[in-house]
Length: 453
Image (tube, rainbow, N blue to C red; front, side):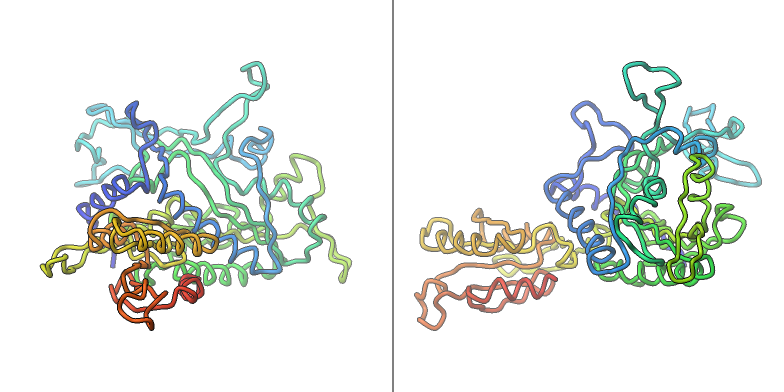
């Protein structure tokens, strides 16, 4: 069943993102620029945690994948050979009534007639191709000879460097090349917060294999990528696999799966897992005249490998993490009265801040001093936040709202004022259950690292 859009929930999430420093509108003091976003102090940590974990799982924990980092600007010939310059476009329609510019697939159909989703008008232009690549110039003159584009995807850098990476890495088939990087598309109508943007980041793997093993690796990577999303904390019931039918797939693809997530604004794609055959390498072989093949030492065969591509959106996944984590429940305040508590239930490995440290009172120097000692103890191992302002319950609530999974409170027991057996112990609070336990300061780092990783 498709999810019913929940605009009220989405509005709360967008508000929280700005209020707590996850995501801001780019150039906001000048009125912003549609489809472009900046990540604040918490957002950049969440994004970094996601990218670091993807790299760990896809590269560091595997023997068959290496990484690279391609440039955003490449020779224009790359985009001609790949087909982007000629075909990378969306059909665009203008509404003559309200002047809205729309993708053709966004039109609403009622009683057999296409309508503008903004004003309901039927006075629409005929669809026309709109190239999504952002053009720029390289060099001192702005003429046809200096034209290139901000890359609309990261994959082509991998294909054109295939031979170099193969030679220096000495990998045998099957093997992959991974990359995380920015891409740019001049979207006709950016929408749904950061979901569809003009500047975005991709986490992409090109996994090279023999032609006869392509479908096997397509299914393998579909399952691996589903597991990844579960491991970062997305609920399995909100993840879906959509197999793209033959008539909707790219002509060179023998199979494509979309991994989709139930956002508050509806079910949308997080990642595509596509079997691209040998199309890209063959295109660059023809256009460049260079050999981009593979030589099998054992069989003495020389051939162009096929490739399976899991391609994930960083920004979409960050948004999914925030949407999935957003929760409202009831909790008692300092006087025992129940109140609404906003919580981001991030998986600990994704949480921007792993642990907050509080002295029970900020005007008691021994408590403050001991709390700062604990911050110094933990900081080399994980991202820690120190807070001494306000009642302890309010401090807990602030950390709950930004998704900090653990809180450490230094109290009078820590100082040994209520028995020597409690000296140098602290209260460790867990965000979701709000349960507390006493732990030794000497064991704190080990306990937290075990819970986070």
